[in-house]
Length: 224
Ligand SMILES: *Cc1c(COP(=O)(O)O)cnc(C)c1O
Image (tube, rainbow, N blue to C red; front, top):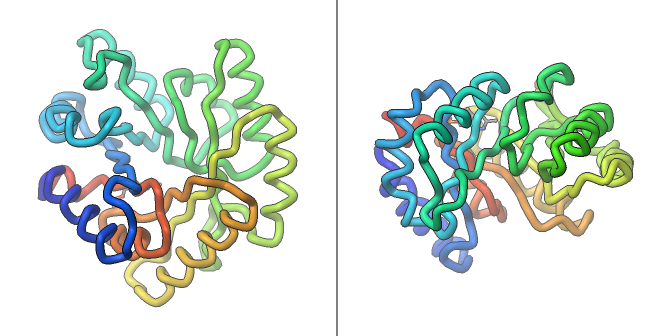
């Protein structure tokens, strides 16, 4: 597949769901991909989405190194501003220091992580916005248990960070479950008055778009 094919799939899912074309933004997950591949498979298509494609990384050092190399190579968004980096992976407190280039953290799990980001942001003069990762009910390590979501949201807001929405990862290979996880997450985001929903990957983004995703995080399909 290629990025234009994935975008066509996103537009088709929006239309089927009765949603406005362009209401879903594609985050290109580039973890494990060398910068040259990112350039050839993603950045050459940047004009296809307003503001270009945010690049989603899952390991903090890799993000730092790739963002530095991109700057060195003078790679920019279509309007000439710097590339938009998102961090989609699990956060480790001692690696927050590598996240300076990041505009949005997708998978915040607790207030300690929020405080570490807020503290780093105070040093940098800007802090990334965040999404709260919701636990999906499966035997999964990551995510905030739904019953704690209101409390954690309030605590994270107290740190001064801007919480823009929720993120979830559906269990793999079980469509019914994925539908339910996406729908539950959409309802929780709505209850909290949060505009963004980061849900959907290569295997399940059409389902996520049906449920209201505003950001889909697609990796493999862009590169294979
Ligand atoms: C790797 C990753 C993705 C992309 O998954 P693909 O199956 O490659 O599309 C999305 N979200 C997170 C959190 C990831 O780690």
